[in-house]
Length: 155
Image (tube, rainbow, N blue to C red; front, side, top):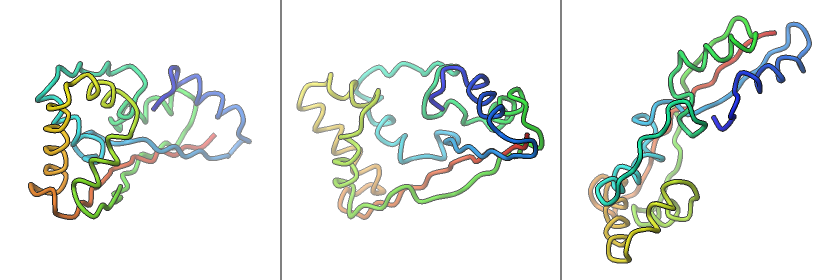
């Protein structure tokens, strides 16, 4: 996900394997299937212009498209490439506020955009994220799903 030259990186992994050796990599699937990451950004978009990500740049969802992931693996030389979905629970929190406190401490684009807002807007974003993650009431427990994609291949 974060490799500036993914084919080159995977070719190096390929070179390190013995013939018949296997590799497995895990990336995040589509944003809409990974609310743990997307809920805060959806709310933040109401308050600040969030630039659309470059689809070719490294990032959390750089390989969210199964076909792209398979293509890159095959370009690196792997055969019998398979891409499978794995449904997981990313996190459980006592309530939406706990989720927001955890999320707010994360680094990355969301944090820098959030910190540009005045304090009153930051508080509003926090309240909305907490409520959105908890199904509308920030006092409800939060359990957010995630969808990693696992790609495997053979040298």
